Image (cartoon, rainbow, N blue to C red; front, side):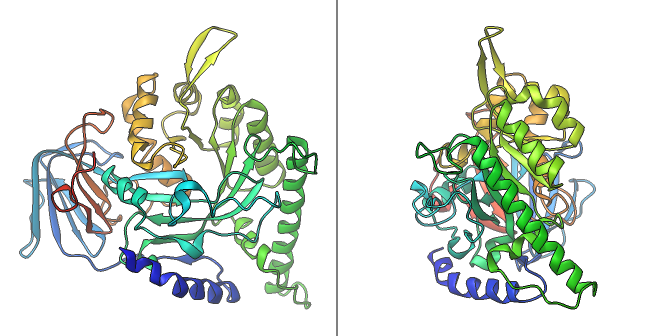
Amino acid sequence: MSRILTKAAALALLLASAVAGKDRIIYGPDRIDSPPMALVAGKVIPVTSDPIPGGVVLIRDSKILEVGPRDKVKIPPGFKVIEMPDALLFPGFIEAHEHMGSRTSARMYDLNDMIQQINPGLRVLDFITTDHPEIEKARAGGITTIIFIPGSGTNLSGWGVLMKTWGRTAREALVRYPGVLKIAQAGNPERPFGDLGSGRMGMNALLRHIFTEGKAYARAWDDYEKGKTGKRPPFVPSLESFRDLFHHRFPVCVHTQMYQPVLSTLRICGDEFGLWYYPTHSTFDAWKLAPEVKKRGVFINCGPRKYFFDRKTWEMVGFDKEWWKVLGDDMLSSNTDAPIVPLEELPLQAAMASRLGLPPEVAIRGITINNARLLGVDKRMGSIEKGKDADLVFWTGDPLDPESHVLLTIVNGHVAYDPDRDGRLF
């Protein structure tokens, strides 16, 4: 997979042409060539519908062609049959908050430029790769799609990429750029220097300032393109993506935790600026805001910490359970914040949530269809359905059981991890 590094320049040129043109969002190919295969499992777990004992999934050209029981799905001639009668077949898992995706991101070297608190000119697109050892481990853990984002050392750290964990080129790995805008509320960006933005009050002021500027820029271009004004606005590269942000074409990923920072996120991103956003982490006592979150229809991406000792009640609280009791099955998901927790441990995060009271089926939704919905790609991935991407994983058993492991990972219709070929990692 080292070839993917040689494609960075071409991808950067593609970005430059896209930004200069009318459409500033770059999408990866919706369909790529892949061989026809029939995947036969002891049980297929579609996630959004009932399990299918003795199920068959037909795939070709990176898409799912058909799903159903063996006696109802005819395997066409020429399809390679991969049969694992004792295995469970799941959709590939989706990670909505992680920092792995470049050759050096294991130690966050190139994801935290921390001179300024607000950095709308930064992006991770220029150096995405899938040959990083941690990405290879992610495939061995059943992770097929990730949101690769800048670090959390600054208040607004730049633009992230939605990408697959496998691809013959960077173009094939890309799903969408920008995948998200990354901002951080409290915690990591706080500094002892006393400059504006070193504390929470200052960070909130800086966010309001850049969102006001970005919204005005977007409105000026909208008015110009609709013929409401004859004066062409000045072109500002660092503000271009705000045009699509305020058109709700991708969300804001907000590193926010604890009651007060999450409340600030709800107020600033939602109430004041009407953005599409999701709080990520959402830990400590933040779950007490669940009624306010539900009122606003906001997804919660929870983790990687999954528990909190409440000193008022002297109880160990499972965050996910408390969020779920108010938000229900469809508005809650998990993350690893890799490399804080390794990417391949995303199912372990779901298992911890389940151990602390979240229903197992909701825990699985939280690393499949719910993360897909949160990122706006649920029509393409997150479940095993006809027409969706062929991102599928054979497991020895329930992924929430730490003794289970991956037998085969398929991304875009290609075998991305085979322990017989690649060596079993877990």
